[in-house]
Length: 297
Image (cartoon, rainbow, N blue to C red; front, side, top):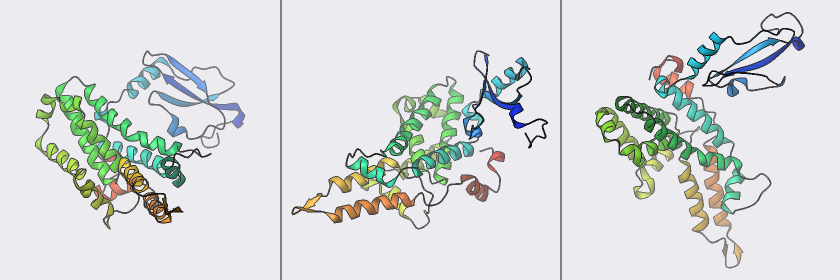
């Protein structure tokens, strides 16, 4: 109220959310006074309005509703690939950072702890969600040329995910492009410029499974690879599981503390990847010399 120089007490006003369905139906609801994280909660087809509780005027006219509906219908190709990679990385890093070290142990030993392993499960699901999102976007487009442009868009997104050190999303995008229904779109792939074919091969080469994914592991362990990092999570789980199943929990009837130390060291290395905050906007600004909102990539 004070911010917008409105007269009256704060109790005179309430915050309302107005949304428009695809059928053009306008919905309005009053939000709780203590509602937080407004920017995170708003939908593309919604707007916030400050309503005077003493008045009965319509917050959103039919013309405004039509404009709101048009604005909400945004295709993937309208979005900057840098912005998409940034949002994927910010969201995924938050999920990854929220995993408690004890969740890895609970999962490993199938322990029924009070805290549970909800964060771990959520992050574990991310790679499948993003893989099928990629395939769905491509297969939903019937126009061959537009479909090729979507494939090209995703290759750019994967490249930017690598710049964000988000190897999990990078792998998910590549996996989506390699799914059989997408790979069978011969006409689409034939239209893809050779430049992007090479980009895709280079990305795929990073995750070459030979020698226990040596290329990926070498990059991850290099001195230049500093936190924040989002690792390929299936590999993280595989490594921890290998230490657990490849070593006896007891030796000569005694607890194998060496095994526990190895598991603890592996988990500490994973947790260390979240020791710095992720801010892709700063990284891209330094790399390209411009803000994300001005980058047309």
